[in-house]
Amino acid sequence: MKNIIIGTAGHIDHGKTTLIKALTGRDTDTLKEEKQRGISINLGFTYFDLPSNKRAGIVDVPGHEKFIKNMLAGSSGIDIVLLVIACDEGVMPQTIEHLDILNFLDIKNGIIVLTKCQNADEDFKELVKEDIREKLDGSFLENVDMIEVDSISGYGIDKLINKIDDISNVIGSKKEDSPSRLNIDRVFSVKGFGTVITGTLLEGKIKIDDELQIYPKGIKAKIRGIQVHGENVEVAYAGQRTAINISNVKVEEIERGDVLADINSLEESKMLDVKISLVKHTNKELKHWDRLKLYHGTKEILCRAVPLDKDYIKNNESAYVQLRLEEGIVAKKGDRFVIRTYSPMETIGGGVIIDTSVKKHKKFNSKVIESLRLKELGKPKDIIEEYLKQNKERYLTIKELMSYTGLYESVIEENMRILIEDDRVIELNNHYIHIDSYKNLEENILDLLSCYHKKNRLKKGMSKEEIRSKVCPDLKIRDLDVVILKMENEKKVNIINKLISSYDFNVVLNDNQKAIKLDIQKKLRQAGLSSILTVDDLCVNNNYKEVLESMIGYEIELLDEKHIIDKDNYEIAKYTLINYIKENNSITLAEYRNSINSSRKNCLIILEHFDRSRVTKRIEDKRVMF
Image 1 (cartoon, rainbow, N blue to C red):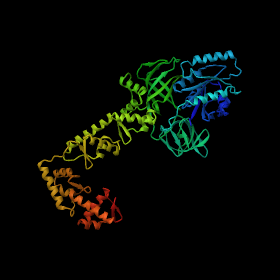
Image 2: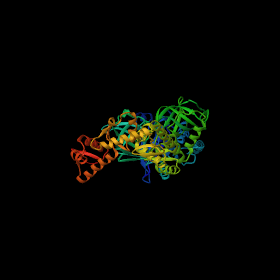
Image 3: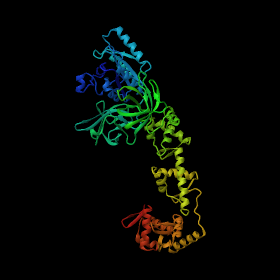
Image 4: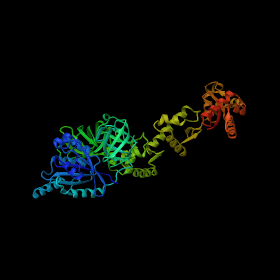
């Protein structure tokens, strides 16, 4: 089922709240102060059922200039706007400001609702209609239907409802497969239940018992209960007005403007790259370091503007701008916003967020401007690739790419497949890295191995953990395995006994070292399994130690930090152990001692080594296969 959110907009006292009461039978002015003053101060929420049985949530937003920030908060997630204009007054200042805001928030569908019409003078009404069409020319409402109503008598209300129903049929589906995101517009406490938050679920689904996160505070919140239009539900879907009861979070820890979303699906930003357009009827110009109020979702935040491709922006012009925020915000690429001057407060423009993960830019940098143009207008494949290029040190998931780009999962996956086929992107266990970053990683690994071989000419190579800690500590071992395997297939490295070396590297011994090696081998073979030797037994000087280290994993095996055994004898000890357990199901220390004809102490060293190597495991006084 489609989930439709309807919002009202318009000048104070033009009849928005009365219209909603006529549509729904409910009064959205619930505060005592609102009743006394006869105006909407805060957001009002209710719902009604359309003839097609779709349920529509409806948001009543304030029209008074002093309460414009509440109007902006209420605009988040609206599908259809009812621009309410009183027939006896026509277009007024807040009508224009609300219209500007709706244009910048990219709301696609709307109806002009002419209120107080039933007893209006026909000639005056026609003049008002003509003025409305003229004032709305060039806006998204320039060609929409204008419906006359009278909310007190009910005149025109059925016609309006049917028109809303018609429009609801062409509204596209919401992003239910995306990570969940809800901009919080109210926070309160209900006795016996605790903290409740409300907002429009913009993306994804929220289920009871889900553990989500409140951004930017980083607070974990478990979903205790969900209501949609006053009814308890198990799941809330994108596009629904939702009240959510959360546990283990106090009311004072949350505020309007916070965001409830999937854990680790959003990142806090203190700078945003944006495309800003100024309204055509302002006399203000946007200059470097102008202080502004930014309205995004339900958040109001102060910021400074840094135009990037112009010295200043004039009315009815657009430009790329970097916004330097005075506090953190969580947002996504493609989100819409509105800006107002700091003092006196006036809505002067708005636009779209191009990038949320940015560094400070200098003005008139052609590379920066070209990159912003690509991110703004590029194809999904280009946008994904650019973001992967930008995140050189991170290995991104499909969900992270969805959060950044705002694209559907299927679109990301299809374009990722193309990028992988074109050798532009590498996949590492469902994480993705740009080919340039991957090549840089490969180059760093090869440089590290080259330096290691120069300093350790008798060592066969490095462990994966050593490489990871020095080159890519953020990469998990299982992901590094994919990189190393790829490098091995491309004949860039060798992997022998879990040690990694450059492909063309070989340990080369001089005559003296060859003699030392033969001496070590001779002593170990003579010792056999009856006498386990230590490093100190064999290494009479540093030359011996260097050669011995080059033999580990090849001609000899380390049983622990100091005990060594010849490779052939090691294989005999292992073969004997495994065969005995296969025939008898288990083996004791005494039985193993008799099998290899060695001392209790030596057998214990060998068995503990096989326990650590997960060949066997100890159960009481016996050992079985791991």
